[in-house]
Length: 505
Ligand code: SF4
Image (cartoon, rainbow, N blue to C red):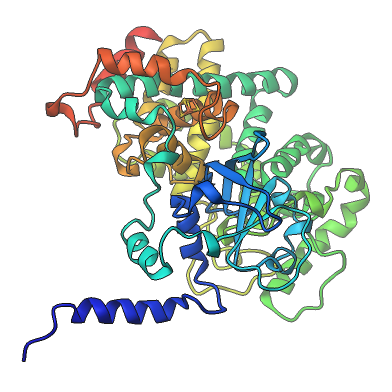
């Protein structure tokens, strides 16, 4: 039997077209709407809001994979020539703005445009709203085929002006430049620690920066505040025997994250909270003026393992160990930068002994999980190392005029393996390195260098690099030290960087 030559194509088109609801009432999947926006598969010259206000998208913004609007730092030009930068939220219909409670959510306060699929029902909206459906540059099923091949790769137009120069720059020069930026970052973190140490002492300054790192991006400020209150907590002596648990009850008490009343005991969690309360209610009056409002914590969108209840359980172990700083110092002086297990060796010092409750609870109120979960993992250990521990030792070495220990801290810094990806690092790779795969960046320090450029330059400009001149110097550098066919894939040579910091710092 001979098939018609277009049989398969015909099936494919008709089946996918029907599943996409092209021409029907329902909106396509939000993922597809995001791709359409990101790649601007729209008739861009005739875009207008539902109120008839023409606009041009100068930059679609950066896809946000965390909580908040779908695209950040979008640049839009209105028909009167004014240019605004802000966020874009994409939803199937205008009512989703209220249904999803965006109007009362502070994350959405910078939204400049609500992009929806369709506006077939009457609605009132305080934010300019644009409808995608009438402005697609091709039928929906055709776009779907095309976007299947470009699902996650952002278009090159969202890269910054630096991306072409970084791409053609000799890998060794690129690494050297990023290593220099990484050292600037190390120094600025260390100076901040030093400034706090002048007020509170070195040990306390370390606690503050480590607590901040435990809070990660969502809860760094309340965690820092708790660290600032450690002297107050320590001013009332502990009875001794059950010290770690008692400290944990104080940390939880001042965090404001305990339930306001004693729970009835119905589960293992209730029993644990009850024990915490047994300590806390006797002391609450002593610390009542320091208790944080619950509203300072951000618990939505947190990974379960990052819940502050768990973080405070870990911190109470650090505080109850009088030899903890000594152990850290021993780790620092004895650890070889070339060791293959740097994060694991630090984790051994920072990890808490296994706790029967926390080994399988993500918070005070969560159900027991099947999978045991340590209080600290390798990824957060790397964050603590590059943001707290190494800068602390580095600046102490400088203050102690010990060049050997300073060089040792830098070697540890440049030898530390990569940190986990996060939204800022993804943005930096996209903006500066043309979305270079994470695996091609050698080490946590180089990631820090990228973040420093993002902070120093990209964050002062906008998505279309307005007013930023960093790319000019980079272009000249790329012209002088271009990539050759022989070194195109050579991004792992670390000798240049090492040579750099050994001879110049
Ligand atoms: S804002 Fe500046 S540093 Fe960032 S990509 Fe654009 S030109 Fe480069």
